[in-house]
Image (tube, rainbow, N blue to C red):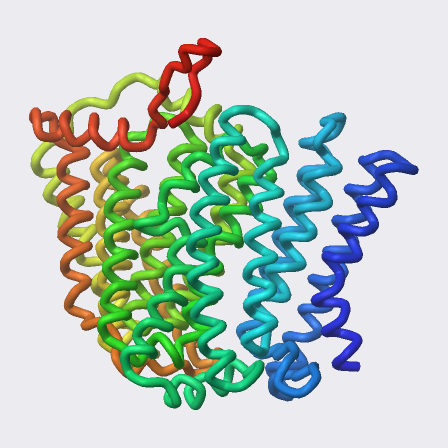
Amino acid sequence: MDAVVVAVLVGSPWVAATLAAVLRRRDGMATAARGASWVTAAGCAASVIATVRVLTGGPVWIGIGATGLNVDTLAVFLGMLVLGLSALIQSFAVRYLRGDTRQGWFVVWANVLTGCTVALVCAGSLLVFAVAWVAAGAALVALLATYRSPQAGDGVRRLAIRLGIADSLFLVGVAVLLVANGGDARLSELVAVSDGLSQPVQLAVAALLVTGALARSSQIPFQGWLPFTLAAPTPVSALLHAGVVNAGAILLLRFAPVIAQHQVIMLAIFAAGAATLLYATAVRLARPDVKGRLVFSTMAQMGFMIMACGLGAFPAAIFHLIAHSLYKSSLFLGAGTGVRSHAVLRDLPARGPVTRSRRAAATVIAIALPVTAIAAVELIVVHQTSPASLGLLVFLAVTAIVTLSTALTTRFSPGTVLIAAGSISAVIIGYTIFLAAFSSALDPVGASAPAPAWLLVVPALGLAALELLSRGAAPLSARAYTRSLTASIPRLHLDLNTSKGLHA
């Protein structure tokens, strides 16, 4: 029974890809696309059954020797996420790409990418993980080539170069571990494999593995490819930003026994995430287009997730991964609605000036409510919180304070105060309780040498400075806006031979 469920869970995207490749030549692409989405949905149903089985009976191992799949708590959660979102996005694409000559390409490669990602999260050994990782990267490049325009080609080229470099370094690290073990090794046995290496080799292997994670999640210094994927159709963007770029956190979690024992590596992970968070936030504030803002919002969110991994808060990072995938996929699929909503807001009459008393009252309420809600949940429900988790809760509180103060300053009345207070309190309480439950449900992953939690002060101050600059009108604010905007726009060079503008 376990083997059947796992086979459906892992194999359904591959069956869907094959079905799409066959049916598009016989019954038309619409039938193929619809059938592929239903097959993927069947895989999602199998993941629900597998979740119940794993939570009640423990992980399921299927393989030969040390090579195979290990369907544990993390695998069933992420498998359900990937398959469910893929089925939903493919169902959306049946209508969105109807009549498009490239619909068949999208359906086939969307399912190949889904299959590789599911195999990645269910991998139980070094060799299976490495093969699934490289295959997912290749499928991602192919999926982004759905449209054959100069801008799309530029994005594909940038992605292929960065992933080629980073994945090659990642494979070198995996090869060292394979040689040291004398063959394939289960991911649960990486501690013993790593301990057999000298200290310099351990550091080098950890750094090589981290390189792959940073590139896949578009983190500094590999951030140059994600903003150039805007030419892809909306379903591709939704699938990409909903799950694929999150793979960096999966790698860091699976290889935590090798990575998390070196504080210098964890500091580098934290620094890369924090730098990407600040850079992407600054650019997002300056972007005027909906999809551009969503892309840089994804980069910032991935930076926050990688930063959490650097702190050793792996369950919090995975929880953030799932939450981000769910809401970002809906935002991309509804990007057209966002354009219409912005047009409506733009045509509304400007609001009058805000009085000092209203601003002061909004600030006091905005600070008091989130802090009180978090403190109450921590004291009454959670009781025990690690320094890293506490630091992340401070970030949550700051986000809630900024959101609430903006809402109350814009429209201050007893009704809006009650609605905003209830909404913010419900979100904070639900987030804190669900994060605690999610952390206890995942298999514990220890970080023996995480980055110090006090380092969160640095990105917090940076975000505060960006918020002040975005609201100011001084020359410094204008200069920061200009630099942020130009940093996100590709430069054009004139080809004197063809007289065509090409992206740099």
